[in-house]
Image (tube, rainbow, N blue to C red; front, side, top):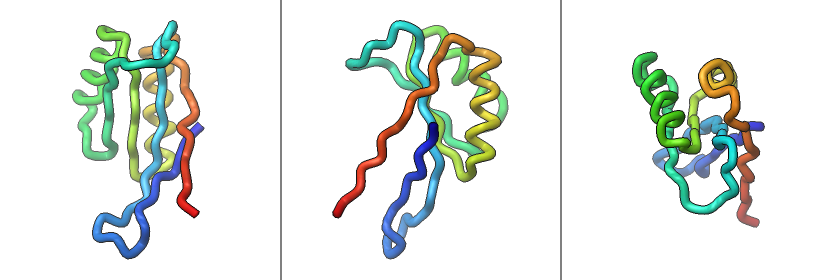
Length: 96
């Protein structure tokens, strides 16, 4: 499950981004530590560190990326390193 985030085209920060989220086993909501990964800006060693932090602190994990392919490549790493983490849907709200 992935969400396409948007800023209105007239805004100076206009950019579309892809995002995905995982939560650790036993996460029943509420306040919890979250590790965020920005792609492609984060280098490989930073991604490895983020996955280690998520594991150590049993934290939620969020990735924000330029492309769907980057999200799916990251998802493969999450599966390999944090197999018990569950990918969850990010609900997108819209203004009418």
